[in-house]
Length: 318
Image (cartoon, rainbow, N blue to C red; front, side, top):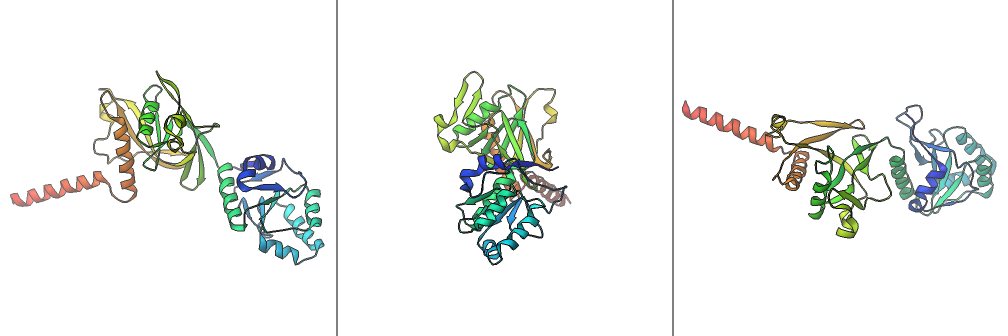
């Protein structure tokens, strides 16, 4: 599937972050930057000038502008005309790059806007790819609270009224950081990497039943908030009853995943009942997840110790 972004929206969203200004006339504003062409995985959205494999966004750096300047204006227009027949919809000059006035006029007549960035060659391309990768990535929204616990992006889900926001507030009060409350927008920004963000204008607020709307920034400071985070773990909160008591893992050796945008995310089920310190349990789950990523599994270690103890006991009896 091809996901696109208009030049107008691109300029509005990234003008400040990429330090963009118009060099040409404001033309071709409805042209679309493509993330994929005909499903080709080899297509780059943005790159330096490449005649053989052109991109939607062409960056003109120092070397590229020097190459074009070494040819006549007529030949420059032949090169650009060849590019414009394909996927190119805009040119961006880096801080020290330049194009002749006749070439810029040619781009304007072809409805190809030309921008200048105050960033140098490599920082411009790196930032451009990063922002476009996020803007053009496949997205989905999920209901829950997304919070960073010990650097682990944790999505807390569960039925309405189970206590997700109360748990998040408790975690925030202990120094962890909120990304989004109630609705979270996830984007697949790279293979195996799903990034979560608040879909609205601000993630400052959280709703807690019986208390109301709370401003986290005003209560705990800006350090209690984070704009986005990679999703690493999902916690599913379920009311504990005698009927479902057999569903919960005792050892932690059962591996369960939930697929989000084609990526498998580890999921744990957290039984909710009076008297349980859910905040400490979430912190422990995050620490345990970090240990698993580093190669240590407490459940496997425990089972192995039990096996060795049984084996030693059997040998003593013989």
